[in-house]
Length: 327
Image 1: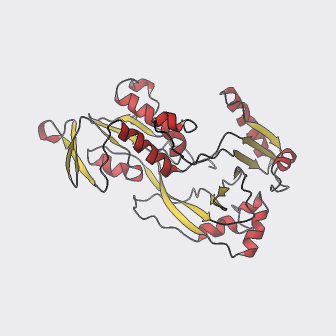
Image 2 (image 1 turned 45 degrees about the vertical axis):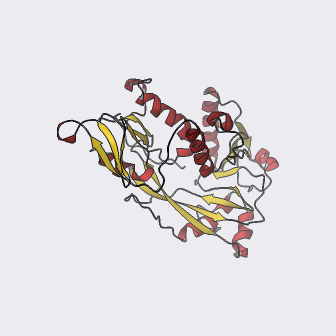
Image 3 (image 1 turned 90 degrees about the vertical axis):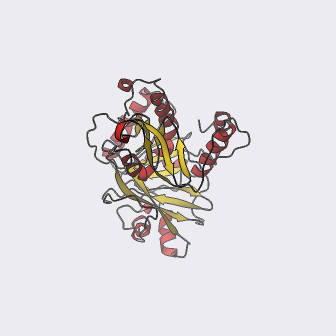
């Protein structure tokens, strides 16, 4: 869908910043190499036939910036990244052309419901500009989805965890044509952005908390990624980051947000127990990757094109708690 975005939304000339320079997953252990071999074998059985499994030497010939300690890599050249805001605006333009109306700077405050005592089906959404009458409302409010669903008495089990991104706008050592480069052993990863890079890793010990409009960041995140002696330092697999750390004069800043984790780390898609109320939320950090197919499934489930027993992401499914993966 992202590769054919202008056709998908029927609007010409949209640029969503799609950059396909690949994803490169790296490991420095024999256990990691075995894990990669098993995963690539499964991926090929699933039909993803263009994933490459590279030895450490093969990976260094292709990507000379890699450390000698890398023993194995998996790479898919067709993977990449995009600009989420451009995607959102593109969907909005395509929807507007089909008659959709957007109310900006308009706070949702509750639901209108029919039936005796106002506990029946959703009949409208209350907002700061009045009530919007509707036969169905979809909760897709990210970290605030639990609050919004609660207005209708629907309890969502979402764990909200702060996630940070280190932005370094200008780092001359970063190869402009590098793929997303991921230390599979630690989860630390980076990719080119502007004339520098975005750098991240997932802090799994971050406590869950309430939804926040303004998410705090911590300078500790910078040091965890840039200090060469850090267990999550990006220099572990790409030694040029040593020089960046030693120079220590590059501009950097942090951005923060919240991931909304469900117990099984899978989204909540489709109707709830309240008639007229549906969900499209809980992507657990995989929103950009999962949202096109997820939103399509949510709509199909809402319209009855997918029966509940065929929807593996239905909100009332049994959920077993899942441990965090490396990424």
